[in-house]
Length: 111
Image 1: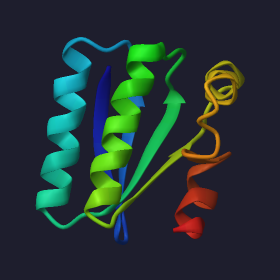
Image 2: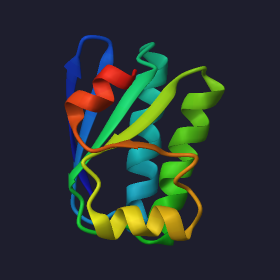
Image 3: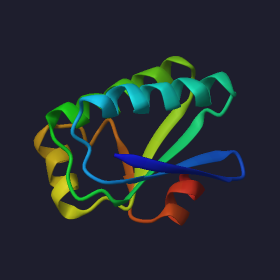
């Protein structure tokens, strides 16, 4: 998993690429979320346009980031999710936790 950071107003966009499979990805992602919270950037949008797959450990990484932001009174949204990953969100009953949007623009508007 790799990510590239950008800003759109007060929304921090993390464009993620590659599979989200756990292992070293957990620490890397968690440190990034902690850094953003420390910088007062509490509106985080994960762009999944280049994420082909996520496994159950990867879901745990997302849940951890979501919980950290929520505890800091922040918000996490996900956009550009492919059907395969979206299906996994529904199977794991996480579609109610992760607010997803079909485009970056629609997600930014929803913040």
